[in-house]
Amino acid sequence: MRLYMGLVHYPVYNKRSERIASAITSFDLHDLSRLARTYGVKRLFAIIPLEDQQNLAERIIKHWTEGYGASYNAFRKEALELISIFRSLEECISMISESEGSKPILIATDASRRIVRGLSYVEARQLVDSGQPVFVLFGTAWGLDEEILERADYLLDPIESGTGYNHLSVRSAAAIIVDRLVGKGTL
Amino acid sequence: MRLYMGLVHYPVYNKRSERIASAITSFDLHDLSRLARTYGVKRLFAIIPLEDQQNLAERIIKHWTEGYGASYNAFRKEALELISIFRSLEECISMISESEGSKPILIATDASRRIVRGLSYVEARQLVDSGQPVFVLFGTAWGLDEEILERADYLLDPIESGTGYNHLSVRSAAAIIVDRLVGKGTL
Image (cartoon, rainbow over all chains, first blue to last red; front, side, top):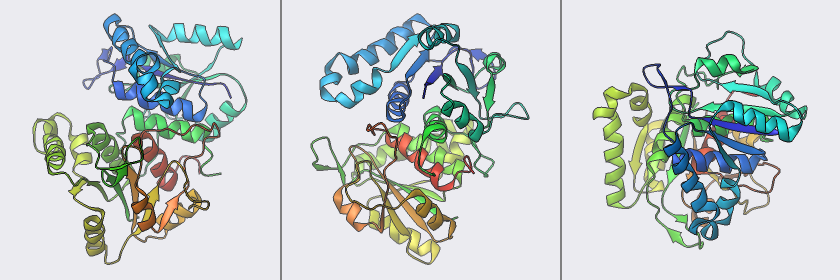
């Protein structure tokens, strides 16, 4: 399995559907890296264009990988070590392409289903199982900008719940999606 | 479906396997209530014995259900309204029993699999589908105390990942578990 995750802070939407760079959330870095480590994801890219936000993310990561946190909680260290910070999606794709020898299949996630026909979870799971590098992108704030949805090879179906309400945190959504793509719970 | 969730702050373990009452985490209340609302869970009980922690949780909830947050984000209001704060597990069980007319089936969750034979996700899903009231308990800190595991009717299997590492946040674990019990992603 050659699965990668991307946590995108730019370009994403704010509440008024404007394109923004979002601030980092410490809980996102912890929860998503622990998720990545648990499921055998190869790397979690935090895509952060703003320099001060990059520095903040690096400080958080270093606290748990080199600082006091590393000896306090070795499990946390193992997780946070999976995070790489990059300025743009293109830089992440280049890095994956270089290390894997081929471009990753790019799957965007979106709760609001802006296109009629998305990639089903069964199909997405088959892509992951095929052994090709797969890069799944998660949006912070109000979700991934249209530009990323268009750039992606596939747009994954939203998480169906049947209640008509779908306002999960990116932490919850990423957990559910990775479990659906890789987990063994319902087999 | 008559599914209830419980977020337990006492009795849980700390890092040294001592029984403690944990502090509340604002992100837990947000993420779990949004999860509950998305999947049609009837109520999320926050079990908090300490009075100052109860007050803090109430302030957070009120900000989003009655205060500025309620008009800022109506979706968040709908989610946070699902939370009830109780001092003990017994009080939650009484309240569910009263409103449902029968005692709920109590399912505890635990990442470290302390008993050989747990409840599988397929079996747990059948219990939920049967229409009986089901109350699933999630532990904060280092997990649910033995006392609760023994009190429960079932202990749900841990989330299998195949990597040997299973250190998810309660936010991620709850999302994965509720999706496995109720979600429609892999059907």
